[in-house]
Amino acid sequence: DAGVIQSPRHEVTEMGQEVTLRCKPISGHNSLFWYRQTMMRGLELLIYFNNNVPIDDSGMPEDRFSAKMPNASFSTLKIQPSEPRDSAVYFCASSLVGQVTSFFGQGTRLTVV
Amino acid sequence: KNEVEQSPQNLTAQEGEFITINCSYSVGISALHWLQQHPGGGIVSLFMLSSGKKKHGRLIATINIQEKHSSLHITASHPRDSAVYICAFNPPLHSGGGADGLTFGKGTHLIIQP
Image (tube, rainbow over all chains, first blue to last red; front, side, top):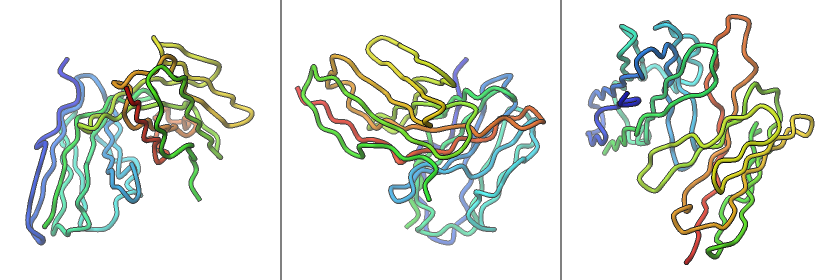
C-alpha cells in the first residue's frame, strides 16, 4: 500500500482565496483524522471521521474551515476564505476504527500570503 | 493547561550518548505514542504502548500508567537520530469502539553532533 496520500505537498495562496487540501487514506482504514501543525501550537486535531461520518469537529478553528469525506477513499479540508494565520502544515492520518495506531501522510505545507 | 508535557524541549548531545526524552500526561489514556518528525516534515510512528516497555533497535520506550509518565531512550545515538520526537496519546476508547484523535506534546528537538 502507498500509505496515506496527501495533495498538494505545498500550497501558496493569497489571502482571501479558497484552499482545498486532499487526503487519500490507506485502503481499508475507516477512521480519518485531519491535524494542523504550527510553530506556536504544535500539532492539533482539527476533525476526525469514522466510517465517513464526522465524529468530532471541535478542533476546527472557525467556520472558514470545513471538511468532507464523501467516500471511504477520499477526504478534503477546505479553507474559505484563507488568512495568513492559516499558514501551517496540515496532516491527514488514517487508522482502523477501534485501533489506536494511526498512519500519517506527508503533510501539506500551506502558506497564505 | 497542556495535557501532555515533554522534556526537554531541546537537546543537543554528542554521537554515542544515551538519550532520554520524558513525557508526562495528566488524563486517562488508552495508548501512548512516540512519533518522530524529520526536518523534511514527515511523521513516523515509532512506538505505540499502553503498558510496560517496547524495544526496536536502539530505541526503547517505557510507560508507567500509575505515574502517567513515559520515556523514550536512544542508545548509542547517531547524527541520523536528529529529529523532533513527539509524545502523543489517545483518550480512553469510547463505548462505540471508535478511536479518538491524538493529543500531542510540543515535541523535543534532538540534535546529535558527530
